[in-house]
Length: 359
Ligand SMILES: CC(C)(COP(=O)(O)OP(=O)(O)OC[C@H]1O[C@@H](n2cnc3c(N)ncnc32)[C@H](O)[C@@H]1OP(=O)(O)O)[C@@H](O)C(=O)NCCC(=O)NCCS
Image 1 (cartoon, rainbow, N blue to C red):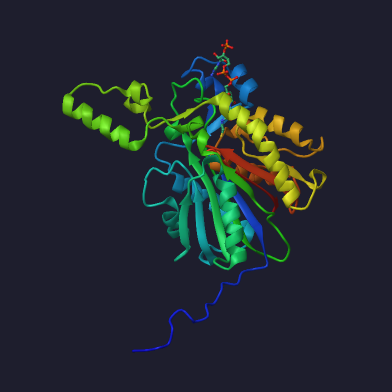
Image 2 (image 1 turned 120 degrees about the vertical axis):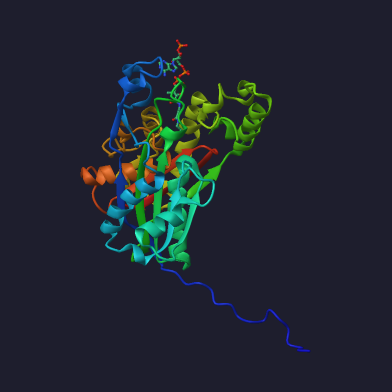
């Protein structure tokens, strides 16, 4: 028997790039424009009320057969092109979404294969409206930690699938779209420290109305008894509403306004800059009034460009920040290479913020 102790070998530690940066972004907006007037054919509301309370004028909804993977693919192409790399150089593909229609497998491996990112590590993350900023944080750490060279991060949602068109409290807010960013090695720091966290005590503020196991149990009960099950006791009007989102609007509003500005401020400080150094403020496009309240609390310079993509894109959850970046760059509202503060927040509750140098 050997007397040599096991576990004495020296492990190689991964070696990554000194810095990571955002090398390219891309966006995809589905073709169909849903106006406030159309929303008002589903719920008792007005165009003026929706504009005033949310800043939304119209939103995009995907076609019935269009999937989150289709939309992600459309957003990834221009992001890779701007980064100047081909998909086969991606070591990882991260998809932030809560609307991929299968519990498993994740959307990311299918997307990676479609793009030609052969053998890339690929996984989804579920952090709702904060998902994209979580993905940027992971990708940056992967590049610097040596587990990846180039990482594609996609935020994509088809929220129209889980929006209850009868719900006066949320039918007007959610929308569909995809935004993508390529993260890779950089000579200078391109992604500041992430300030992130969660508050599971408030999980009910935005959630699926009825969990899948309960939906299945109630459907089985209906099949066995031949009578309608008590969907109302389970938290929904009926079976069709059970898997849709419910949102405690005022709870979310208050949390976002009061708790997220300090997080954004911490991200500025962690990046070693001041608000005056920022070229853009790109918060999650949750609601224009939340954005305005954050600007005031952060005391941002009056002339700083602020993402207001929500007006024509609606709230696309994980996709909203990269979509807003794509628009601001395309419309030359912010300079290439400028510093942007981005913050995502939503269901979980979960949040993440960082200062990034735009590609
Ligand atoms: C959803 C939201 C716009 C609702 O606005 P609100 O001011 O909180 O609405 P309330 O439910 O308190 O209702 C206020 C009034 O508007 C009315 N109202 C509610 N929904 C309405 C609608 N869709 N159309 C017209 N009127 C409406 C109510 O009946 C109430 O009227 P009353 O004052 O005569 O009783 C707001 O809470 C919000 O933006 N929350 C944050 C949501 C968000 O950002 N979610 C995404 C997070 S990722």
